[in-house]
Image 1 (spheres, rainbow, N blue to C red):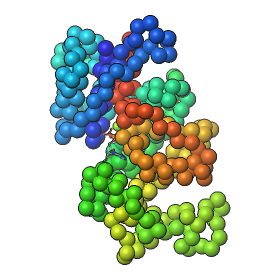
Image 2: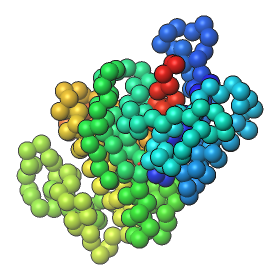
Image 3: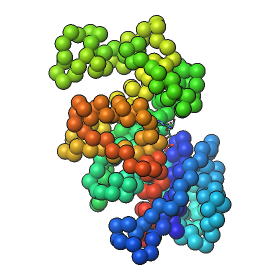
Image 4: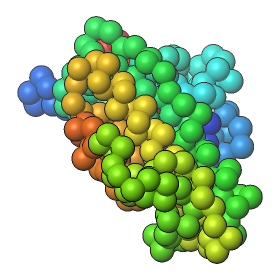
Length: 280
Ligand SMILES: Nc1ncnc2c1ncn2[C@@H]1O[C@H](COP(=O)(O)OP(=O)(O)OP(=O)(O)O)[C@@H](O)[C@H]1O
Ligand SMILES: [Mg+2]
């Protein structure tokens, strides 16, 4: 068994990856268990996630062949963990391999929405970091801290669900009577460019979510177009956001780029780290 650990800037994810005897070549590797934790420092969160995985699943230490570590905090760990051979994996490579495994195909564009956002072109023999943005889940939480009465993610989403974008965003219909190329009256001309005095917390929450996913979505659209593909695989904790998905769906309507959300996309990077083990 291989354990993949992704020490992200906000959360640490651990998965176990095993070969399944007797199954077809494509399905021979299975992700069996998944754990998510949060801790102040890298070593505590990595060892904590690992320990939780072992204890909750009655895993025998002798069954673990290797621990594969990636993510922003990976550099903080030196040497082997608990006497088990431990290897570092480049985070971009881990996202690429995990994304291809979850999408069940190669030659894909992956947009990983974590604390920040990374966009990756993943092919079987070449995984390239196209770029990204500091706009991501951390942006939502940081802005919420100063602008909203809650930093709890569910609380932010509840507020946003009742929001009215017309209170905060300047839309094309506010400034023009006609369409501007393919943009209609509802299209955003300037995020937070209107900000009426009557704007409520609900409206601001929705404005934040809308802005973050519009930025990430447009970067993804340009990345996909630059690689002549019509699809983008979305991963990271930020991929599981109903309002964010709605914003991305609007971009699909405008730019004809489809967004795809694999199951367990919060674990893509950890899974990719586990699958990077050369023995697989
Ligand atoms: N439902 C959600 N929608 C959007 N963002 C979310 C959601 N739940 C959590 N987040 C945000 O996702 C971020 C954590 O995501 P993830 O665990 O993928 O990132 P990370 O791996 O720690 O960071 P990075 O990959 O950028 O180093 C946090 O900033 C958190 O605020
Ligand atoms: Mg991450």
